[in-house]
Image 1 (tube, rainbow, N blue to C red):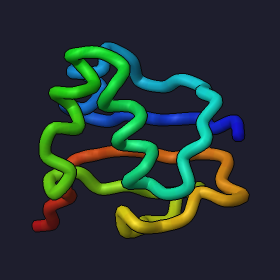
Image 2: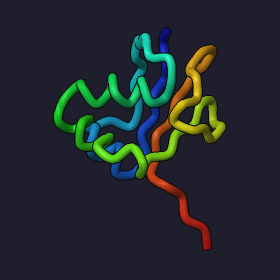
Image 3: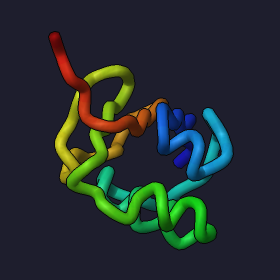
Image 4: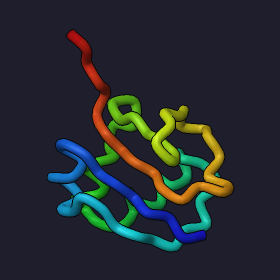
Amino acid sequence: MKLDIRYFAWLRERTGTASETIETEAATISDLITELSARDEGYALAFSDPAGIRAAIDQTLVEMDAPLSGAREVAFFPPMTGG
């Protein structure tokens, strides 16, 4: 499947890109993280602590086991704080 991937904050810095379009066979967010982590050292560093990453599918926050079926966009970002 084809996905648009968006990276925010330090994830963008570590991967070296704000966005990209990829082809993937990943079934879940967790599978996608594993696939992306294997790309190079920057991606491995960006995803080295999945507990410190939040994800959204088509602009809706999801858990790491969320299925990617039918998704068009996945965004990765650090936890949000309020105030």
